[in-house]
Length: 72
Image (cartoon, rainbow, N blue to C red; front, side):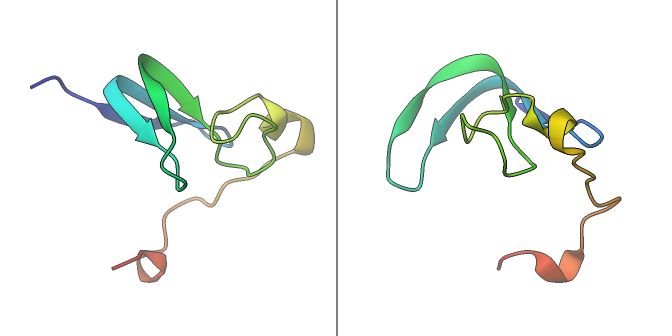
């Protein structure tokens, strides 16, 4: 099985590398690509993909995940 990795870019997007299929909440399937950048700032005009807006708005990500915020 091929490996998928997710890299967190400081104050930027998540970089997903490997054969991953992205399915939106409404069930829309986005074509699988070997590498995609997913928006983390919430301001991208191409959500769920990153369009670089994070650098224009000065997005500052949390230093670490908050375990209590995880969904069960």
